[in-house]
Length: 315
Image (cartoon, rainbow, N blue to C red; front, side, top):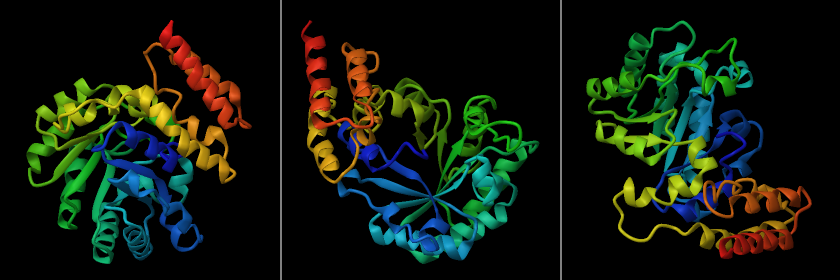
């Protein structure tokens, strides 16, 4: 998620789940290949498994960007064909590419030929006045022919005119039955569903209906402990204790200290952690203390947040 799932966020989330596949923010192929932004590929090995999400529509440029990502160690390179923002549309990538599946096929074929990483696609069920029941299976057929073996489908249309990116995440109705039907129609494709999944109960129900995976975005970001801490056991079947949010908060202190020592801001890390105790005792004190630290926050401010949490838990 752009502006959300940076390396700080992913390192934090990895402390909660060892097995969930994490995704980078979308990075444009142009920024990597022509903009000298290779630093955007930097990640900590502790984040693995992690996928690089690319945006673009030039096959040769995407191939070069995919090779760069694979060289950095990303296990999966994902092409975004779902983002509806005006900025993305003006660059002719994201959801607007649902109108040109042949071009998407050329892009992913070039990416696959350029590197050994798995190439996946994230798409919508259609855009604007397209009929998803016709468009989505035709799109998946092209992806399969291009060698793609896994597709993440956001189970909503994207309206490229008239709705903001935020509205496009909520207003177009979800069509889970269509995505489930695609799994039956394309049994050889791994199909994962994205959109509107707010709990692990929902995720487990969808997986039980035959889907190969689910992608959880905003719920995992805003309630990371509720989603991620139990995911290893409930989704991946891994035995063992769940991550303790209090222990995770304490374990993040060295990472925060290193970030501050490099000249970073406290909020650059803690903004991702505000929901760590969502729905739990101490959540309000945790959020308030971190938020009050502001842009100039220090490690002492983080220690005050930990102390406020301890006091609330002891009350």
